[in-house]
Image 1 (cartoon, rainbow, N blue to C red):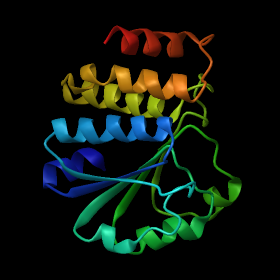
Image 2 (cartoon, one colour; image 1 turned 180 degrees about the horizontal axis):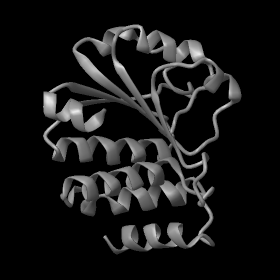
Image 3 (tube, one colour; image 1 turned 120 degrees about the vertical axis):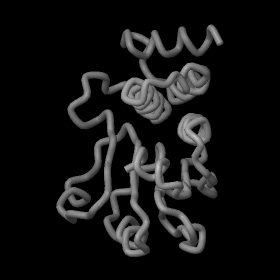
Image 4 (cartoon, helix red, strand yellow; image 1 turned 45 degrees about the vertical axis):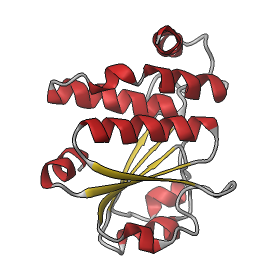
Length: 177
């Protein structure tokens, strides 16, 4: 979805949680997309709203893909409002969604480290960094190389365990930057 939207010149809206992990996850995705040549605008949740709860749908005018980072909302109606506008939706998070979100059978992509990923201590910024690294590998680019510091800040601010080797590696690379 993301690669196709970049190729087609579609606009992106990135929505993030207001905390440090959400803001760094937002920075990773937005900066990565910009390096790919995408047109990106970012929104940070006001207060402690989660996901796109109460989202002003006018923000989606001319947007082809909305990406929600570190801000999973388990209310299917929140996502249905977005999907009904025709915008494609991708959610990057590190929490396990409630079953009712799966049961709603909505047409969106969820990338979550809480779903069959061996590191249950990865933060939202860590999930976004893993996506950027994967996209680099698939597209033979190195755009993620400058983003390690954001992933490290997100992991550390979210108090992710440094006993997990992957988290230690991310923190090491980020602090080295």
